[in-house]
Image (cartoon, rainbow, N blue to C red):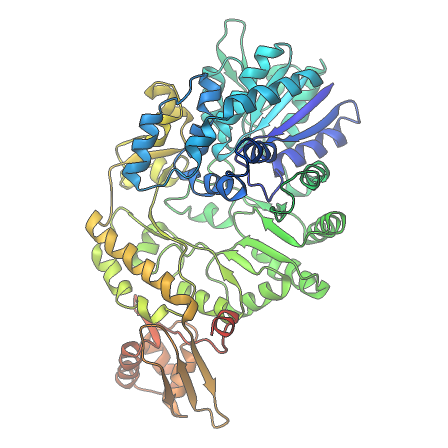
Length: 612
């Protein structure tokens, strides 16, 4: 049997598709070579097509804009609606009105949409000529409409080709809803598919009844959709490393190869160990597969060695939702010893110690997403984040000290938050000028599977499928309820006016960061000299004389209450409180929620050196 696995736009151009590359290996290993399995990276083909069709006006930057910014607005899906519905400018008025209301630039999306039908027809014809028995689509984020458009045209040209779609967009109830509404999709697979996909191939070979393929949606004789029970989550050590050979071959043969910097994608763990205990209230990830599972460190090392050696690429994106804390003891020290000069992107929890950050840097985890989200302890408590605001600030300071890039957004709009929660933070934001600011400030979305979605009594009692779906799907409200991942709800938390205040403060932070530094030096007699070169503050060198005050300041490198820090350094709470008040006035400490943490780094960051 000939099997083709397809990755459609808008998968990032710089990374291969992990699901496609993993299922390819699983199929080859477990089906004992009885099937011919190949990949098609039509996201790359789409970028090539656009550049050629527009004489270079639309290239990689324009593609990336849709992939990264458009994902929150249904932009990439809308672009392919003319191909799916065979109608030029399909709901263009709704689309443009939506973007205008949100202040989002359409980029090149309007011109892109003019080319989708021809692109889909071209590649459906090419695939039909190859006569595959099975075509499988992996759909996550903005890949639904592009996948549906190609599937529909392929079935028109070659009805005998079996079509199946799976991926993050197909978790229940979204997957069965796709199956109900699009009759040219023969099957939908929901959930983790490493075993289910092999079982499905066995079914097509006549070796397994359709009812025994876990997570499969199929049609009964009367045309209704039947969905089998979900598959159990596999242990991570049973999931093979992906095979990116075909992706690299496609990229190396592409006219875009000099404009795309390839990065490997790797998965060491699934689920979230924090979410098993306290799911963050706004988080819709891992809704059906929260149980945390990770690979043995030795297997991770073997996989990484093989991938790096085969593809000669050191940039790696880990798609784990959270770092296994055991890896701080097992995996990361080994990576640090190897001295591979890796450039790892990893999601972590924010309560890491400075020694942990130092280890991350040595092991190559130089770009992290720590889930900081906010700098108000009360708002963080509403989120169920399990960290104090001063821990978040300490992490930013430690990452600045060890040249680790931090990727985070400032979130607001939580039920129960107040302007007072933000006022105490905004007052101190100028003191954080030298620390890495958030990439943006945004009101939270209501996501399927999040506690806020599952439990309306937490605050979001009225909801409807997000407005973006109105210019994407031609479905009624009931069907959209099942197919949507994002939902609109009554606004909670701070109001629109104060929201502008927050966003303005964050934007100011972003503007001053590159030219700001705050560094503490220790003299031989233990006197502290603090060199303040933050934008918005007077350029000055502050001195804290050796003695109890300097010891208190050192002690506050770790967040403490004033009373606790006073006890540790032999000061009275009154004297310690007076010193903290003065340091807060000078912007040398962050004081929030009853705890205090010092702000100066211990050495100039790479940013500070190169920008001066």
